[in-house]
Length: 64
Ligand SMILES: [Zn+2]
Image (tube, rainbow, N blue to C red):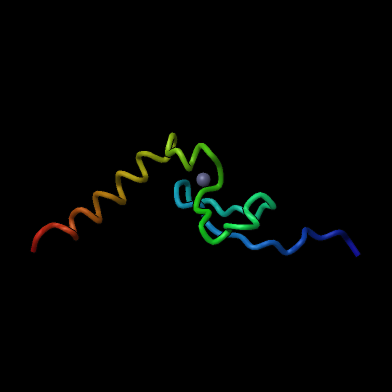
């Protein structure tokens, strides 16, 4: 049988949208991990994406 990757949980990064896999350093707070990397967490290359989604929310939150 070929070797298989262990079946680790995955979820999409909140910044770049790419799926990333569970890591041991996140064992305690995997539920709260939202970003695949520090770059995404600090929003360096995801600012444009964040602004788009915030703009959408802003439109909905505006007083109706
Ligand atoms: Zn990411």
